[in-house]
Amino acid sequence: MSVYYTLCFLAAMAITIAFVNQYITKIQTTIAITSGALAISVFMLILGKTTWPGLQEHAVEVIKTVDFGSFLLQGILGFLLFAGGLGINLPALKSQKWEISILVIFGVIISTLVVAGGLWLLGYVAAIPIPFIYCLLFGTLISPTDPIAVLAIVKKLGAPEQIAIQVEGESLFNDGIGLVAFLTIFAVAFNGNEASFGSVMALFTHEAVGGIIFGALLGLMCHIMISATDDGSMELLMTLCVPTAGFAMANVLGVSGALAMVVAGIIIGNWTRYTGFSEQSQKYLDHFWHLLDEFLNALLFLLIGLAMLLVQFHWQAWILVLLSVPLVLAGRFVSVALPYTGFRRVRSYNKYSVRILTWGGLRGGLSLAMALSIPAGVKLGSDGQVDLRDLILMMTYAIVLFSIIVQGMTITPMINKAKAAEKAGFPIE
Image (cartoon, rainbow, N blue to C red; front, side, top):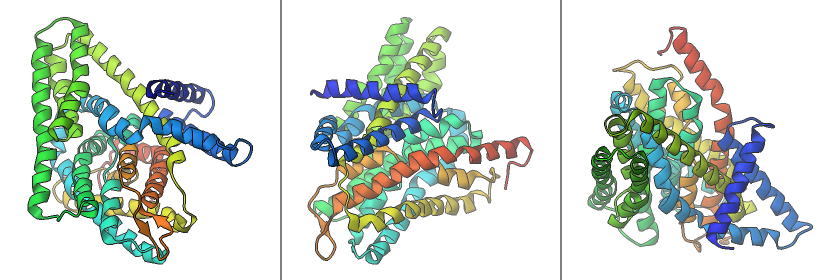
């Protein structure tokens, strides 16, 4: 079956789950789709082991035709981040620029070090010693919050503006920092490269700063072209060129396509929207990108649930898998709480800010895509019983599922308490 046919059937499956969810479970759509796909995966695994031999292998082959990593990192990521950038309120973002910058840069570094150190110690507890360079590799891929998961779940709950803009802004920008860190550690771990301050800064400048500059130029060019026409259809088509040709060009140039899409989306959403579009075209813009965002999110979260079929489970590593969830949450808490001790010296915040930022720091498809890119063949343990790629993929998948399903379903009470605190006149701590 072709990739196109596979995606058609998967999209129909995702929409069917979302439709049924409206009448039965009535939970958030993305959570319902992930849970439904996970249930389907478990069902196929059981059938494959009992009454229908070969079903699991066939299902794995079908999922592999999509190539999850490329589909996300080189495909729909541009659309989802551009749609997220369109919805960002730039004045609100500017009011939180220092908080977001510190959380993006230092938050990722702090979380990476906490997770890496914790995993290194836990490896000895589980009798599967892990070299520290691989612990750092896992820390870099799991520490950045996933903008797609955050925007799809947390943003829709209507958190207080101060908290919402920090959650959204951090998630949209920190994946660029995390990806640079991941690529650097990856090169040291598997390519034998030496990591120096100069090489890291050169990579960061080329990827992150280059992506921001390219995104600004792309947004400016799109703004000029949209402002030069009154054809509503043409205006929408021009916005569609940004996450397609624009995203592809960013990858060709070797700059961060993710950051470029966010910056271009912010420019078009906060400038072009009001000066280049008519009032009617603004509505078309919002409706078009909202619909496309919903569709691609449904497909992505279905693939996250079905990705269970790609995970090779090792019973020797279960203790690490179970402990990886609280470890990553601890790293996230430290990376948020430490900066907030400084933030509160100059500004007041909602007393639920740290809790919401910690529990709302969701992980999703980006972490899975990076985990899938790790080469197989590195054996761990005294007898080489566990493959490094399988171990990292197991831990990542467990964290992603816990993040989307458990954290996504239980963060609502925290947000409601934060909103109630503001309404009662006690918004600060």
